[in-house]
Image 1 (tube, helix red, strand yellow):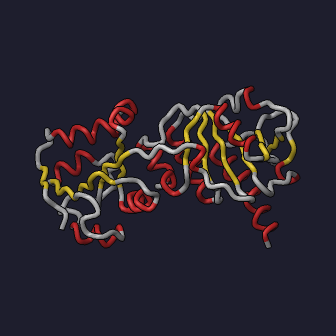
Image 2 (spheres, rainbow, N blue to C red):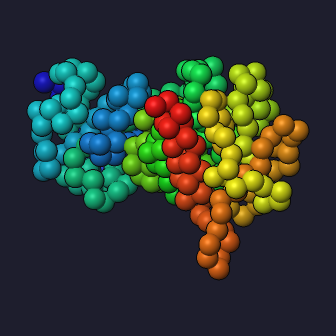
Image 3 (cartoon, one colour):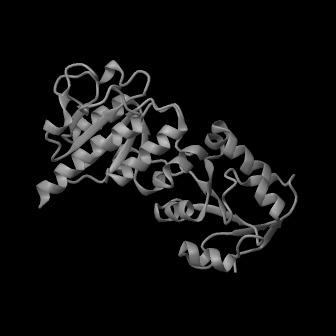
Length: 271
């Protein structure tokens, strides 16, 4: 078995570090580490190629043997740390987590990590600031089969515990890249992506737009939308037809509808 360490003190430096990483983006960036809670999320994290520094559990809830089985890993894959029930309750950001908490190293990706293919779908989200919204966007992107998500000038980091929780681990299931607007634009142009923006004015109905081949759908913040940086010749502006009395959607819902339409067209074209 892996377990060599037992932590019972709430004042233990590792306990303090875990709490700090959960609470402060600055600390996550400083140590290049973050915290993941729950079997499903940790499993997706492992399958996504992230390096687990150590895994914390309480025998009050589970055992090392059960965790190895549930995660589908080999013994000695990484250190297991047994903690007291009081410590586990302290370090659990989500109070419904009753199995495991992992300390994980950053995996910093760039646009060069995106695997290119002839028919692919990217989501580009600019300036997203609310962790819950970003989590929901990533969950939708994964569900709708996006090949990658590019976050341009994000105002919250992808390793925020509320992003991980809101995405239900989808943040680990697909490539997520953070970069500047200009880096994203150059990547899309260099690799011949159709660029679909979501400005309100002069937009085409998304049902009547051809998303087949390489397509990138761009969304901005709920309050202001995309910045004028993305108003470029050759970009196609699309919208979602509305039938009710309110003419706006939550950004994660809009993402779901646009990605669904694009993925449906791609799947139909391949048959």
